[in-house]
Amino acid sequence: MRVVITGAAGFIASHLSDRLLAEGHSVVGIDNLSTGDLANIAHLTGKDFEFIKYDVTNYINVPGPVDLVLHWASPASPIDYLELPIPTLKVGALGTHNSLGLALAKKARFVIASTSEVYGDPLEHPQKETYWGNVNPVGPRGVYDEAKRFAEAITMAYHRYHGLDTKIVRIFNTYGPRMRVRDGRAVPAFISQALRNEDVTIFGSGAQTRSFCFVTDLVDGILRLAASKENDPVNIGNPHEMSIEAMAKTIIRMTGSSSKIVYKPLPTDDPKVRKPDITRARTLLGWEPKVGLEEGLTSTIEYFRTKV
Image (cartoon, rainbow, N blue to C red; front, side, top):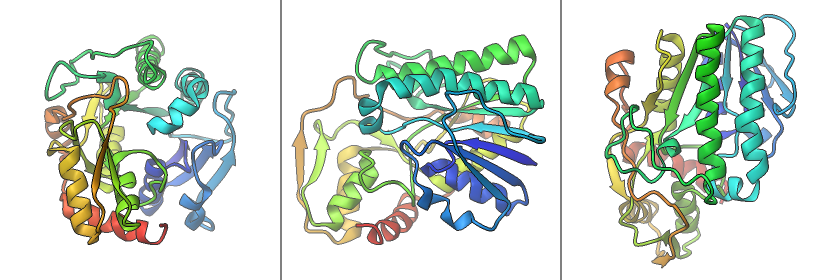
């Protein structure tokens, strides 16, 4: 296949490129580098990979055939989308519209990277794809949550109105090599602080939960969904739920750090719980995560040792 990936220099998209190239496909990566990093794709030079620096909130034209469009462009960390609220909304709306337009023009399949954040601060636990969510549209996190909810809506509109073969993957917390040191999310923040023997900062009591999936498991789930006949949303994430405090303590132990945990106020609208119901992924895609937490963290910590 010839595959177009928007947001190609980002954490997850760079791993998607690795996997697609390893399977013999050709990849065209598009990124305006607002949050992406060319270092994530530097190793792809000389392979069947073409990079285009471009902002997908503008009309997208890719010469030649395209078989699959993966729309991964978006700030994804709270520190990014709180700093870039309008670009976040624009890439969720205009960027998704333009990426769908490319897929339609090329008669390509389309996959949108949605997120567990469409569930907001959930009143259902664990979260099934049938749950409509509990999102504050005017809160500071609304710029990301509602951008992704709109992206899902326009994706389904293209599927229903134009007959486009579209997929929606709702990604739960994912970690692994190539996350940024100053990403702002829990795993990279805890690892970088622990490796420096600095205080490890927890926001809130630390009792809030997340479910952490290693990036290679996520990529496998995404590509299984892309190859499937499924058009309704599918959760891809690790259902092993743990508290943020437990994750911080695990990382301190695994890094051999002398760091102490400190607690700061919880940000507005921060979800109290997160756990995917992956019944659909298991039954429709034959997918479930395989990489255990300590195995995944070992690989991630090794990467961060080269960066901190």
